[in-house]
Image (cartoon, rainbow, N blue to C red):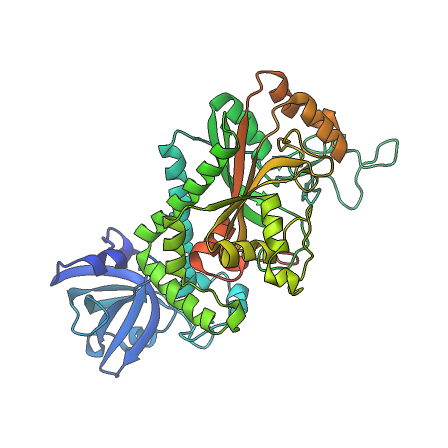
Amino acid sequence: MEQVLTGTKKDSIKQLLASTEYDREVTVRGWVRHRRGSKEVFFVHLNDGSTIQNIQIVVNASNLDSNVLNQITVGACLQVNGNLVASQGAGQSCEVQASDVVILGAADPEKYPIQPKKHSMEFLRENAHLRMRTNTFSAVFRLRHAAAYAIHQYFNERGFFYLHAPIITGSDAEGAGEMFQVTTLPLDNPPKNEEGKIDFKEDFFGQPTNLSVSGQLQGELAAMGLGLIYTFGPTFRAENSNTTRHLAEFWMIEPEMAFYEQEDNHNLAEDFLKYLIKYVLENCQDDLKFLDERFTKENNGKPTNERSEMGLLEKLEFVAANDFARVSYTEAINILLNSKPHKKKKFKFPVEWGIDMQSEHERYLVEKHFKKPVIVYDYPRNIKAFYMKQNEGEEEGRETVRAMDILVPGIGEIIGGSQREDDLEHLKTRMDEVGIPHHELEWYLDLRRFGSAPHSGFGLGFERFILFITGMANIRDVIPFPRTPGNARF
């Protein structure tokens, strides 16, 4: 079998389907998705992951050993040598007339779980090691790749530098405390200090450390020397949330920009989202068309009041082509207070100035009121992080900060960001208010002591964005191996 593989030119199925050079010998490898036909001549649908489309292999049983024929089953991995010809049937441009088939890896049809039938999402999550062989998940993860590539391309074209923020950190960027601890101390008998507390001086790093919840603070450090930077890496939240929107491990894109103020931040975030959407629309048409059809079927099965008014492709094209609405938090609250759902008490969560808007509120603004993405800015200071720049000259009890969220249809918040506080005394006062000791972030305060400058940034949750462009309903279905409470399989 190794001799067969060595030195053999491999044509991807995507390349073969795009080719018009027929009547030539080709070699194709992939996994069997489907088999049909008679004992004498049968058809195999082969897929190698390069495209959502399968290539049809025409197999004449008389040309092959019976042992090989019996192993051409769904899930098996094959190498096929044969002649590429124009297809006589509808639905495909070409097919391969097999002259030789090699079984690279057999799959027992009685045990292989991903058979050609409809499987529930929960079943596929339980078999996440095999779910990329399905049309839905292969499409999702090709789109995930394309979006990641487009992110790097976008920032590179605009003079940003890619920063690798640390995954292990001693700081809590959000101040939320929901962090995974990192330690090499023996859990059954950790060393104690004179006060009877765990002595972290004996630990690997000599201090308490955690998995990062954000690369933002380190990104700010870099931006104040390099000007324009972005981070793109894994982040971790030890939040016990079993919802369709939360993961314990997820990826974040976090640009930080020196000399950017509030409106600059809004403009970049909107342009960034539109660029990514346009990129996948231009480069992932087959996968998006498949997911659009899937989205329509799922949407039609929902109660009328829960249905999306647009299809997936229609929604993406609309968002890419239209300016986002921009509204202050105070204006947004007034819109909600005057809305029918509020007046008829249909909102599950109350509406008043000072609340942290829930998904139902965000989606009303996007899907019912403005009917397009919305940038909400100037949020109440008390519901936002300590590092956000405070607006001045406001009435007591209604102090706001230069925070912004971008809300999109079907998701709600997809981007959160702010202009960062660049005044040393204001930042120290805010840290005192929320109980963050100065000595823990002296290095962060130094940015305001030595050459402080206006600067801004935002974070895009990568999985939330993939949810948006794929139309999937659960965030666990847009990351290869989801990490959630009680689940760290694979």
